[in-house]
Image (cartoon, rainbow over all chains, first blue to last red; front, side):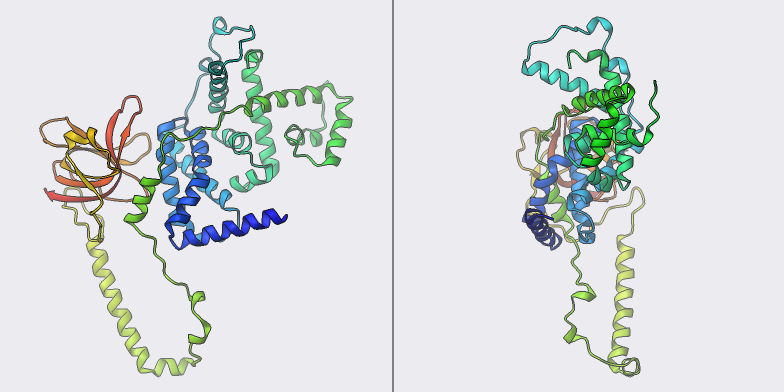
Length: 192
Length: 244
C-alpha cells in the first residue's frame, strides 16, 4: 500500500466514524462523494433518469441506516455499490426485465448512413445514445460489469468484490458483454 | 482454424483492458503471432471496449440531499453504546454468587421486568393499523420547519419542506418502484387539484384510509416525467389524520 493509499484509507475511516455518529456534515460528504457514481449505476440498471434519482435517494437512506454495521471489511465504495446493486436487482425483479428490440438500436437499413459524419456535439450525443441503448439491451449481469468497468473505472478485482464473485467471472462476463456489443453494433461501425 | 487454447482466451479481456501481468502478456502475444483466430478475437473485444468506453457519465438533474436529510431527521439513528465501549475500570470484579445474592440483582430484575412491560405496551400502541383505522403518530415529530401549502397553490411553492392538508382520494402501489402512493385532493368529490404523496420503503408509514382527511408532511418536488408531470410530496415524512 502506498503512502497516498494509506492516507486515503485513514481519511475514509475518519469520515465513516463521523457519519456513524450521525454527524450530518460527514453524511453529506459521503453523499457528495458517491452520489454521481451510484446514480450512474442505477441509471444504467433501470434506464430511467427521473426514477434513477428517486432510487438513488432510497439507496443513500439505506446506506446511512446501515452504516453502523460497516466494519471496513471492504472499501466504503465497494460496500455502497453492493447496496446499490441489490436495490437495483430488487427493482428489476419487481418491474420485470426490460427488453429493447434490436431494431430500436440499429434502425432500418435505410436509416443507416455509412458516410462519415461531421464531428459535432449533436452527433456525438447521438452516437452515445446508440451505444447506450445497446448496453441497455445487455442482461443486467453483463450491464453491471460494463458500467462498473467503463463508467466507474473499477479494476477486475474491485468489480469482483462488489459482485461477490471471482475476477475470472468478471473477465468472462466482460468477454461476453464486449463481444455482444461489437456484434450488435458492427453494422454501425463506420459511424460509431 | 478455430483455436483451442482456452487457457489463453480467458486472458483476452484483461489484455485489451491493460490489466494483465507482464509474463501473461508475453505468452499471449507470442501466441497471437501465429493464431488468426485469437487475433480476430482480440480485435472484436478491442472494438467492444472502444464502444463501451464511450458510455456517457451522467449527472443527476437535481440534488437529492435535502430529501435524504429530511428523512434522516425524521428518524435519527440509534446510538446505543456497545459493551466494548465501556471502560474496563468500571466493570466490578465480582463472583456469580455475590451477584445473585446482591440486593442490586433483585432491583435490576425488577427494573428489567418493568421496562419489558412498558416496551410491550408501547409496541402494542405502535403495531401496524388495519385499513380504515385512524393513524396516531406517537413518535415526537418536529413539524415546525414545514411550510403549510394549499393543494391548489402547490405550483407557487418554493419551500423544500411542506405540509398539505386534504382528503385521500385513492391509494395504490406504484407499479414502477413498488412504493405506496396516494392522491391528496381538496374536495373529495373533485379529482383536481391534487398532490401525489409517495411513501418510500425505508420510511414505512402506513397509508391512510381513502376518504380520510389528513395532513401530509414531506419534501415538495415536481415529477417532470412524461405521463406524470404532477406535484408530489416525496418522500412523505409524517401523516396526521385530521378526521376519518
